Image 1 (cartoon, rainbow, N blue to C red):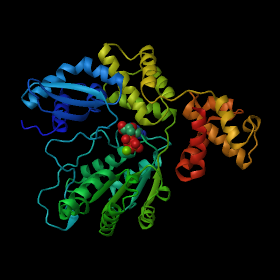
Image 2 (spheres, helix red, strand yellow; image 1 turned 135 degrees about the vertical axis):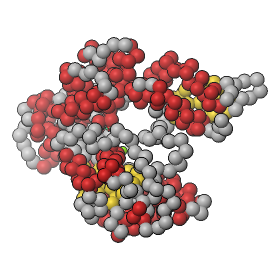
Image 3 (tube, rainbow, N blue to C red; image 1 turned 90 degrees about the vertical axis):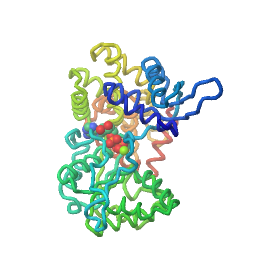
Image 4 (tube, helix red, strand yellow; image 1 turned 180 degrees about the vertical axis):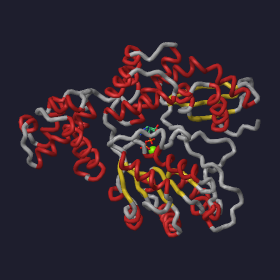
Length: 461
Ligand code: ADP
Ligand code: MG
């Protein structure tokens, strides 16, 4: 095989291992691998392939378990002996494994009104990101139903549909789900999913290569365009202009646009006003952190997908401790299952607590603080005494400071919502949940709140 780069070799390795390994192992150790470098044999030595992974724990596991296999595979692929090394790297592997030979995930659509060379083919979407695999709870039911309706009636219900949230709460999942559902209903539809980064890169490449017709066919000739992480268009005026024209072209011809971002339209910075006002003209909806019940249901569902037996006790244990976003929750589960797979043990409570302790150390590293510490620092920042924070006083400043405390308590302590409530002057769980969600939203919209939370967090560390 003619090998041109580390990325090519890695792509083939991933294809091979995706079939050979169990999914938890693949997800944990192989998919996150990134290509660093491939260099041909110098005199007397072997060629070398350098791969990257995000942390030392994973690197150790990978080398122990698959070091030899990786070298063997790389050797087969390259047709010569290859030394494979793995280093720590901050690069992030793409969400979708590149499919060999599929240069573009786009499908020329039937509605384009232009000559279409190839018949539409199945859009390149993550097969697991379907509506069936999405657990609905209070935090996401509105966005879920908006997405569902859009998928049933493209271009009719809400156009554009704009979905926003913090990371790991299901935006990408829902975008893919719309793509799947629409395409399942009608295989002749042209469906295209791209992150705004991909859109930008392809735009630049096509401008350079004088291939704008191809670019237009790719993005303007579809029935459903799903653009993810649109915030990355900020500060890129040329790409924004192209995006705006694509956007208008699709809307005017009744095609559906769905956009995801990490904040609501009005809070996007470095974006043209005309675009922001268009974003808000359809429906804007958000996703917030799911509550405990939903997190438990998500874990149950994911375990079922992996055909793993997970007791209710263990589901609750994980859901109570891993409280950030759903991606972290899923990461914890995959790690637990992979560990059990390696160690040939069952996911008991004891194993879970051991593996998750390790997870917190190696991964997200969130310092665990006491509510008292948070009350002190936030109280100083807002100039509100601890006594007032705990009291029923509802003046504006006190209420705001108190909600920031709730939010930070959620971030930096291991307390449940009810525990935070009882330590915070005997408030109930729904009051805390309301406060946490309110601040989570306002951080995105109000620079004053964003700054307060950032500064207090910094002082806490
Ligand atoms: P975002 O795009 O908002 O950063 P993703 O869509 O990538 O988040 O979601 C992160 C992970 O969490 C994905 O694996 C996704 O399947 C999962 N996930 C998020 N929300 C849910 C949900 N409600 N039900 C099931 N899985 C979910
Ligand atoms: Mg995403």
